[in-house]
Image (cartoon, rainbow, N blue to C red):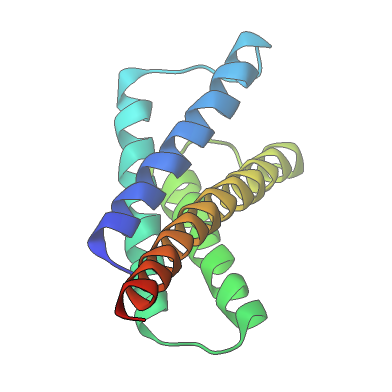
Length: 136
């Protein structure tokens, strides 16, 4: 994973979380403040840093890789967001909502990152094919 990919992960996850929380805010479930927005950005940046580190471990098993990524999200959101920043009370309702949100955001972010990587791979393969055709 390159720095660019880490930035994309942070931006996509922050955007996805803000959309979900804005919808919940509109339904009267949550309240937003500028401090919360900055804290959220800090947590999504921390998550992308964890994912960068996990990627550098060169884990070959995709399920183990995904589990480690989800655990890094859980540590960041539940530990930093819920514990340090006191985003939610530790009741089953709020913890369930929070876990649901970060799993959905993880899937969205994973999907967008996968799509970007697929498009990049396709472009690289197309360039290689064009180069091979010129040489022949």
